[in-house]
Image 1 (spheres, rainbow, N blue to C red):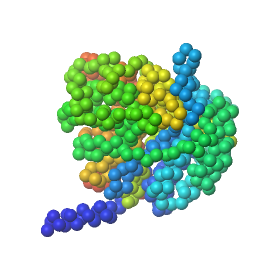
Image 2: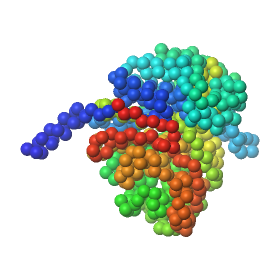
Image 3: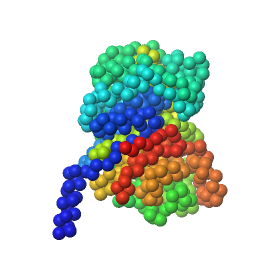
Image 4: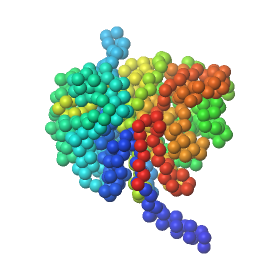
Length: 560
Ligand code: GLY
């Protein structure tokens, strides 16, 4: 009898999932409020994700955007999560050596600061696709808050002021950006109201005519014309041909969880899959959060995973990438077997598992580029989004006629295999520039299920450190039994193969016993101010949803 009742209850729960609370985690409070309002108006998580994304294009211009691209992981109760790829593509006029001089050397700033560093934007098409497939409220309604914020203005926070100050040189070098962010040669002060009339008009047109406006309408024409004057190479047909693509997530099983991670062109899913797959060859259950043993072992594993990432991975649609081999248990067992206890392998001695690559060394530059947010509605639908302009404020070029800030995502290609990009990542041939190709990313929006039920939504900005931030946040929740707040706050470390250092956040770096033991085992260490800026929605066994924004950033949570 008991079994029949349980079975009946199980079927009921699958058909009528329990109603929970509306939950939003976003990088700043205004956009979080927009998300909650959309949910309270009867919108679902997908509607709210679109509305938050458009709002952030106004209120969080360092990464929120309509001129960039990104990824979303989408979960509907009873269904496997699906991945939406709205990554930028290389324009049709792009060429493999476009950022090299006559001697074959990378031209400084060409792939980060010039108008030709912009890839074909994917965000508007991506949001439109998310809404077309799963949205509930009318499209226009989702853009109203962003239009209002751009037209009526929003208050500059101290976090925003700091972001403008940090990128003052880049922003003041462009007339469009300078007029908006550094009027009179000064960074916008805290509390001033910032109005974005040109952006408001563009958003209104997108509200009225849909993504068509951005890719084929008047906005497309103005965008291409102004960009060309600045030296950009995106054409009308590049915009017309842009597609957002649904992809099958990388599915990894670990510690009783089913992780659904972003597939190529993100390297995140494959890299986390490799790391967890190697970790299975050790006594993971015996590890403690941030102990010497854990940091040592994960750093050794990460060196090997990033060596593979940098060598073999690239946009999947124009280059054959045999990534499945990297996740085979036998391959990972062999790779893990090379890890020695208490005797670190220097990066120069770690080779990609399927063949050689050129090497280089550069200190990574971590900055708050990119942004992540997540939404869950009462019915349990959940969306985790990470989208970006690449560098903070992209390449710093703002097209005045449309109010659009340009991405500098072309820098995520390997301009010259073996040469580090903005994040110090050294790429291989698989990620060489080609027309129409998507550049390799590290962005890793993730959904984790357990026994077919929602467990976590995760994400983080941070360039190459996104992978290890999402990984550690996951391990903190799953393996180290932390709650959501503890899991985002815990100190982080990161190794990306090249350069040969473990980056440690101050709390770890200042622990003398820990650093002494790590150094003794052959690890090289470096202090970094912070790593990542994670977001979490977590449903532990007690069924009570928790949400947390990283204390490293300006993010907030709203549960209603
Ligand atoms: N632009 C950073 C990334 O895609 O990983």
